[in-house]
Image (cartoon, rainbow, N blue to C red; front, side, top):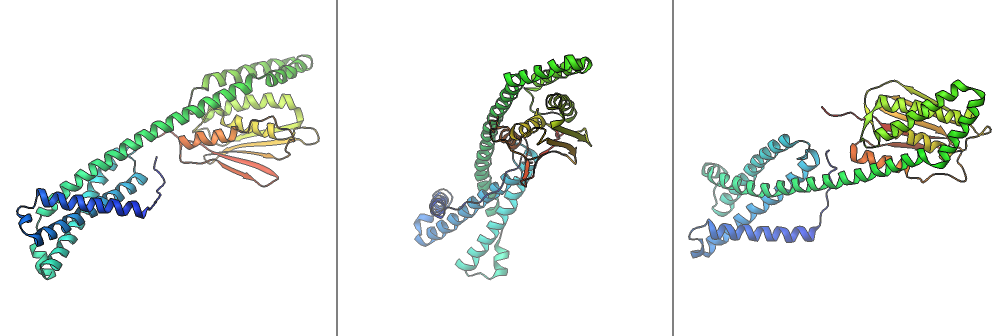
Length: 347
């Protein structure tokens, strides 16, 4: 997953870092690679300045390249593409920096004309600069990879926490005394009024429990399975509330995946937050089309809500760690609409 690119500039830190890089590069080059420089103050000053600026431009340029590549192609998702782009960017950027620094050095220090400077250019400084830049980039890209790996581990732990929370809340909702009491109360009425429907109610209730228990450890479930579960859940709720609750489910596609119980959470939230009565019937429309699930209900909020308020936030958090796509929420005071993306597994 690519990351959002942000640029934060701290001029004090940048000034200190730039000075230290300039000092380190100039000193290293003067001590290790410049033979006889210490015998000539003017020569060592020029060499120190040239080397310092070379290291500074190569280091800071490499930092910028790593930051841009991190935002576009991460090591964990695109390792080969990232490696090739990193290598190509090193060669191109280093060649440009060395060319202009050598050109400026020849013109300013030795007083050569541009044409004479071009004739003096050779590949030796470029080879050395590329080796230096490779060392810098090996450190920076290695650091970037380790940071991404660590962040992935943190994200996975957060996702597991959100899943456990959802699993617990879903199981709690299905087996809490209110749900059991309401289900048994509805079943009692059906036994006397419509035995065939009572048998169907028991069958659907058992399937709801089976689905919750079977899918509680899954990150994603097929959309088709979620639709089947929702048909059973809707049947139970409509038996409970009768004509006071109207739920429609229309699906124009069967392909794709959803986090388990995603639709149930949204439908249950609508029931918990709004009045469901003969005077104020609740209408919930569930539509699946164009790679999205739309859950829409009219608004008549309860004064006393039997809700923890974490269902939708929990679902948003799960999506945050599964995909870059976001859940959309619209509230115009009359209708409440939640738009949930359908996900697809990469092959």
